[in-house]
Figure 1 (cartoon, rainbow, N blue to C red):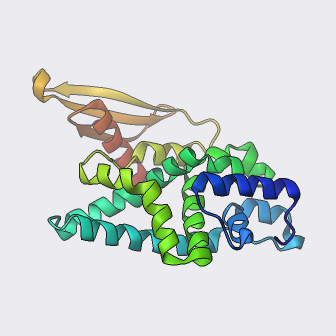
Figure 2 (figure 1 turned 90 degrees about the vertical axis):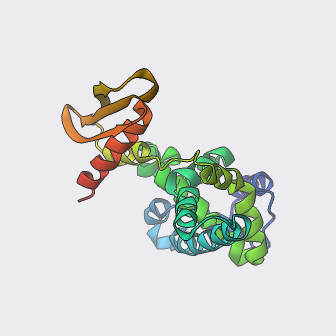
Figure 3 (figure 1 turned 60 degrees about the vertical axis):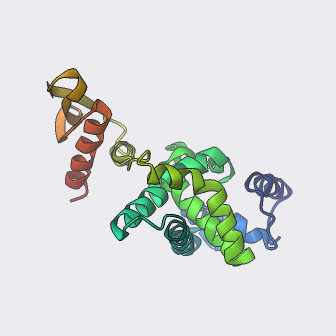
Length: 237
């Protein structure tokens, strides 16, 4: 319990109950919930933050999910297994679980990150979820990690197998664009084709009236996701 205040210990004990896992080394959990922005504000104290745990947790997560779908969906070909795993461990899926666990309330963030909405940022919440996995792996081994992962992601995995989980390109695009406080993203349906039972929608995504990308789909939501996907290609290039 190195250098942890009474108030911080109470928060960590509260979070342990939330995730149904008791740490042998509570400092591992504290590290998993410490963002680099917090450590950077106290450089002289050499505070450990969660990026290395995130790296480890990402690998453990991939292995556990791969093992589960390989053994429980024996009829799925390799391509489908890859797709299900990608949907199950993608940033939005992990962030949703973090939101469910209210991880944001327990994070140590720098003042700047806090002021710009870091507690609700998809990338930070997703990274923290992976860091928690890494911390549990170091503290309790693979069995404890597997239990935590499946407790939290089994519904997501099953939804991905049924085709109910989509990669959320809109959220990813929003997070990148919103770094500029003057941004204003909107989606416009520019065309509809076909009969009511078999419509096709064409959508453009704009930021401050500048077209970032266009897409199509059998529903407005699907077309918006396709437009965001194409916009991300342009934004990230």
